[in-house]
Every structure is written in structure tokens, then in C-alpha cells.
Length: 109
Length: 114
Image (cartoon, rainbow over all chains, first blue to last red; front, top):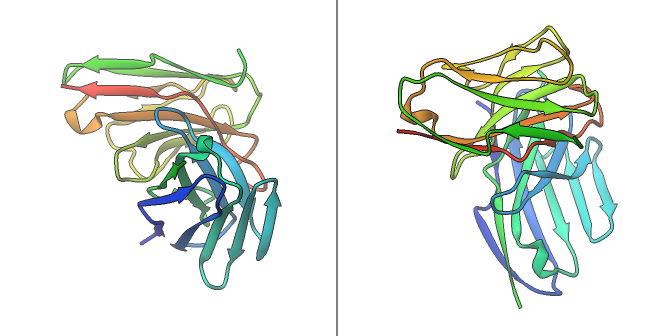
């Protein structure tokens, strides 16, 4: 079967750095996405990785190791508005997105 | 319209009733999707469409049907609603299925079936 694993919840302090991990087992791999979802809202796109390595976009970075079935999202200089759920999704061999259940990130002042 | 709209925003429905959730996008995207999101579970794909005139089944298609008569609209129909279909439904679109093509999501429809 296909599986995406992420921690259910994480807590971090404003101004700090947090790393959210994602491991996956899917039938095929055609890229990995990270989305942010604030409570009661729709998911919004953060990053896309298809090659091994780090993709940096402002305060957010995403890393992929295809051979290890592993990715992480790194958030720097945390702000209160970063309190949200972070969703990891893998595009499989049928080009469908398989989604993790999401990691709820709580930012404390 | 800018992006994707969904209607209604929320709905309470009696079991056994028929319901159509509407989705319209103005980005001229080829691909469209319907997901449901339940607490503790990831988004699950119900149906998708590669392009106008074609549709496909996702992970959880039973009890749902879709049509894609044109590029912009992708309605989702529950023929006879059951309580297990209580969920938040998101419509999404992307330029295509493949490549660096992020999916853009509508605001969602919160559906309760009693």
C-alpha cells in the first residue's frame, strides 16, 4: 500500500527554527509537494521537490532524498502566523497526489 | 472570479438526499480534482479530470459522480447521501497532471449528512 508519515503535532518558539519530517512509501515517484493549511482554510502550495537536495524559498526550505523516501520542511525565523498544518504529498506513478495527514505546528511566543 | 470558487460554503443534508457540490475555476487549467478531508486523515482523492470531457476515479470514488462538460466547471454529485460522507470537500485545479504543476484549492464545502 501507499503511505505518507508525518508527526501529528509539533511545538516551537517564535523566532526559532523547526524541521518537519515526512517519510513515504508509494507506487512510483513523480515529485513531492509541501502545502500549508491554516485552520478552516484551503491548503496553499509551499514547495516542490523532484530531485535530491535542498530547495530554498525565503524562510522556508524543503529537502528531498528520493533513495531514502524522505523529505523535510525547514521553517526559519518562526512567526506566529506560521501556526498551521503542514501537508506532505507525493505524486505517484499515476500522477495522483498521495497526502499525509499533516503536521499541526503550534508556535509559542 | 479569481481562482477557484465552490458552492455552497456549508450544507446540512438529510441521508438519502441528492446533492451537487459546485466548483468553478477561471485559470483555464486543464486538470481538476475533488478531495475530501477528514480529521486525522490526509486529503483523499475522489475523482479527477485531465481535461474537459474526461474523468477518472481516485482513491474513494464510491457514492460520488462527476462530469466535466467544459474547462471551467467540475461538479461533484452525491446521488444518495450517507452519514459517512460527512466531510470537508475541496475542489482543486492544476495546469496539468504532471510536471511542476501545483494544485490550487478552492475554499471548501463543509457537508454534514444526518
